[in-house]
Image (cartoon, rainbow, N blue to C red):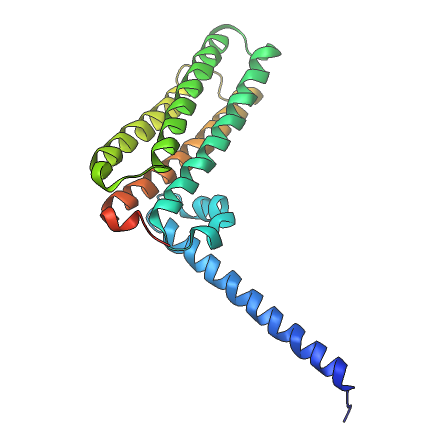
Length: 197
């Protein structure tokens, strides 16, 4: 039998406890994001895109709704920048060039609606909760419609730039759909969801 010096034994004991605690925190965080995303249509995408908020959002529907809208804003910004690059370099011609211009405009509207939504989520109030939830549903639904409208008008689906654009826009619409589901979850939790820890 090997005997370890006392300091080495204590150090190894400390490491094993630390590792076990880290795994428990990770498991709890994964449980939180999985539970939050259970109301969404695209659950695996939701879990992947929101897992970074697991510990900070905990079990708070209002924090998960904010996280969902924040991630959607980031993704809309990324796609909008991609669209601007396509436009700048003239990768699309004819009808697709017009469709791209329309798409850029749609994404500008979507971004405005999502920013407005995040502003409301940051200042929820018990006295205006129902009105705020109605506004959020309207604005996020409009952002989703804007994203989906972007895809209309493109032709030549086998063209490289059109295919990439469609995939990126579809992905962001899934993320926005998930954000809407998280906001609707907040609406169903009612006033108690506002002051969650």
